[in-house]
Length: 179
Image (cartoon, rainbow, N blue to C red; front, side, top):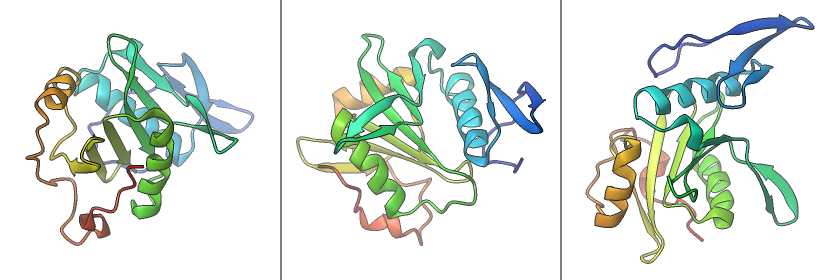
């Protein structure tokens, strides 16, 4: 699999029916190793090992209904009180992160109304903090640790630079859907 812009983690693999599968430590079973699944599994490990997100508060492929259609979030993070707090949309490394990808996670967020959204293809990672009262958002310079999420939200800190956002990114025009 392609090298990602994330730390390296150890995974369990197996071959079944001529397909390589990777073990998901959250769902506790093997899944077909696609490029998107590779990004998802690496990002889960990043959140757990580098950002201290509790394993028990992470849901994978959580279902939702959107305009009568069944959809699934890639990664959903819950607060210690059991409320959804952050959603991650994972794409394969060869998928460009653009407005279409943000539109997708924005539509999903119509259902959840979460204060944090992350989009990653394993190479580029974008984290936005949403202010629904002001109908605005800010890109964070880093993905916050789990314990920082509540502090950032309470203090409404909108002073973050866009470290993850290349200067030539079309996302610099702030057109993320907030609905």
